[in-house]
Amino acid sequence: MMVRQQDSTIGNEAAAKAVLALNRFGMGPRLGSVEAIVADPREALLAELDHPPAYPAAAAALPSSAKAYHTVTDANARRQSKIVLAKRASEQAKQQMAMMEGTAAGTAEGAGDAAMKAAAEAVPDPGRQIYLDEAKLRAEAALSANIGFTERLVWFWSNHFCISADKIRSMSGAYEREAIRPHVLGRFADMLLAVEGHPAMLFFLDNLGSMGANSVAGINRSRGLNENLARETLELHTLGVRSGYTQDDVIAFANAYTGWTLVPPGDNPEHGGEFSFNPRLHEPGPQKVLGKLYEAEGVEQAKDVLRDLAVNPATATHLATKLATYFVADTPPPALVERMAKAFLDSSGDLKEVARTMVLSSEAWAGPPTKLKRPSEWVIGMVRATGITEVDAKRYTGGQAVLGEPLWRPSSPKGFPDDEASWIDGIGRRLDVANIFAERVAGKADPDEIIRNVFAWSVSPQLSEAVSRAESRQQALALLFMSADFQRR
Image 1: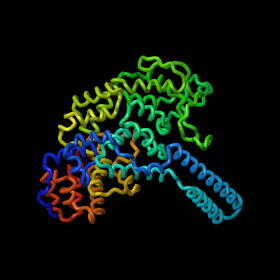
Image 2: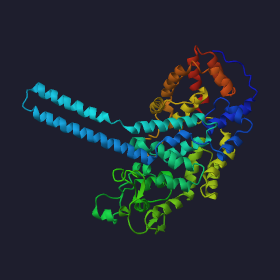
Image 3: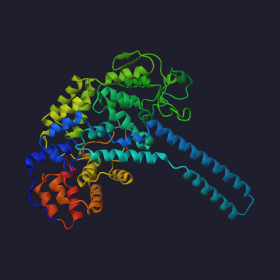
Image 4: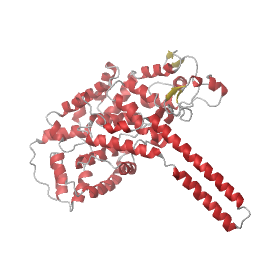
């Protein structure tokens, strides 16, 4: 390999600042992106907030969360009916051959097992294809974005308000499109209400059957109160841990949430899977949360709690800290967090204003690019640099799983972590992925061109030297992908 001497018309310092902006706030440099923002990277980020790119038009063809949910539910019901029929036929065959010798009886049993397996496979699971279609569109939106700042905000908030596709796969992509995307530059209160009332979140955190002890259903005692949604709303989604709420607050909030459920698909084919408030499940009477009495009846009771949580000072600090940690540093500058929290409170939770405050703060730019990218960020940055814009969803989601960050599948309601300690042990797996990807793209991706035209020469001299000494293009690309220029932001 031979990396030519710098011939870019962009100055080193200007190019480095543009690359920092693309890595720290966007999806990473791609061909032409440095030149597009180098005149004023900060202003380019603010311009994207004012004019965010539209999500791909292909999203219009994707099913809503409710449609996806009852599509999968219907398929499961059809599959189960075929299995039951096959099992009945198998049992009849066994009874008819009960008097036969062992070989014939064993043959009948084997045929029955094969028939049930065939019945199960006769109705494919539509949930997997729905998941892959959503994943493909999401990844391609990140690859095609000029900067990707608003797309990164979507990724942040989707992880903050995470659900798990392991529990509710059919809705995972639609949930992000319906509850997160429309609100990333709007008011936090609107996002909070959209998220907590979304059927995917209600399903994920087990609120569908939660009922108050004194509700109509609770008196019949078929089930009981579930605290999961209330606890995670307080601890993870708004106030944060050790923020002053008590177990009594959790219980009262959980009572306010009772009745928040969804329409069963089997009961209503047209609206199955949509949000529904069931008054039979709702605990009657006022509830006291954080010292305030909420006297509204029905669905509005929990909504009133959420509106107050959305503008609580503890919420402002919690969210500002998480945003600054995600974008800037594992230990963000206190002054940056304080400024972002103030912007949140002064604007009544205007998330666009909070993002603007972060971009306009000198502390957000001062630190060197030492924050380790999460696997999803690294993969997208690597692919963007090669110019690829189309995604093989099976390969993409499989790679994310190998790297320990399977799409929409965090191991807990906390979401995926943002600190280096949680990801550094996976560097070995990144090397394997980098080698495989380098082999696949070596015929069309030139490491020299990436250094010169994508990064505008703003890479370390050591990396340029290492790439120039590589024995093959594949090795040079793998070295490039594993460098700090791709791993850090």
